[in-house]
Length: 113
Image 1 (spheres, rainbow, N blue to C red):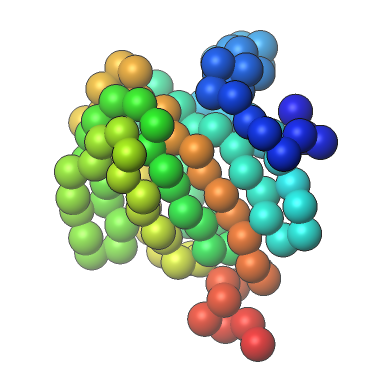
Image 2 (cartoon, rainbow, N blue to C red; image 1 turned 135 degrees about the horizontal axis):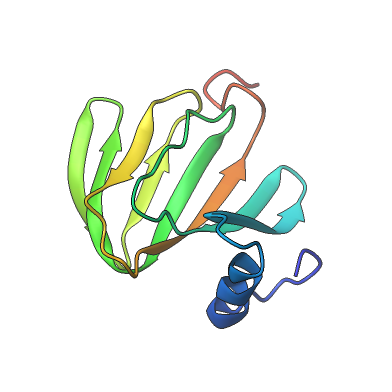
């Protein structure tokens, strides 16, 4: 799917399922943009990333810890995380899924020119 400009949720979920237990699958790249699907199961153990990122929740609900913030989130919500900031999803439903987009330079745009 990495060469496609039209991503279909059902196909993205099949790609992730084929990775046998993985919670993330990279799907598309263009310039500094990388897009994938993220479906944590049981526990979200991700670490801060080196680039800025945006999540678009596509299914389910839960809570999002972002730096010092903590908020409910559900399908349709858009969440921004600056590079290097501690973040994770918590208390999420079994059907939780989100698109995740990484973009910009290492260290985030606030550090870029």
